[in-house]
Length: 238
Image (tube, rainbow, N blue to C red; front, side, top):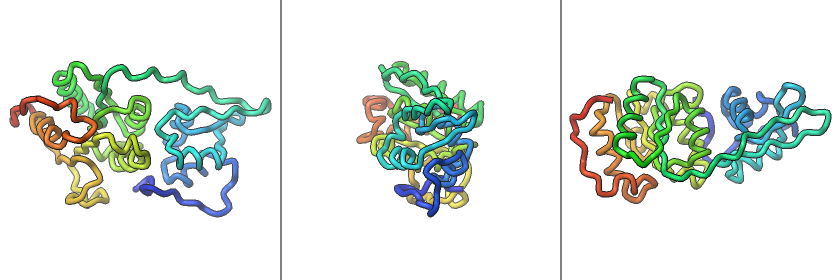
């Protein structure tokens, strides 16, 4: 199911100015569990009444429209009658470039991470086992490259890409999608995919790196591949 309609948000009539998890999930067209995780991680502005998360409509609307989704939004201070949520400690500035690899298949995740760690020793390679985990890492670190499976749990690769495209900076991150499922079954045209690069599984490690190197010029990952010799195309499968 498509989670977020690119570039716009539905404005249902009669919505309460103080929203529940279900209200926000319906408003943003995302899964309730995703909203809950964002509230816990301080990504979306929220506060607690007792042990229940609550959200101000105006704060959520401003968070969505202003691009603050790319930052870890501060949690609103509650009144004395409320139990305030505790924001996370500020993320440390990234001191070196990083790559986020999102893949729910444990073996493939390990293979991809090993390939990039070996090929780019000066780069942090961050694994993510689903789209929500990937999104949290992306917002915190703003990687120069994202490699993501399309059919992941919680937040799939297409939903992740669509969310990132709502923000100018995050939308410019080179996004490589890998899938064993035809695009028509996933809701997009393979001749005009919403990614910088779409690769079909199985893909060899050599072909993966060579394909990314070909589209790297002018993209956020350009510096990674500058001057690199092509990989042997038949290198072990991923």
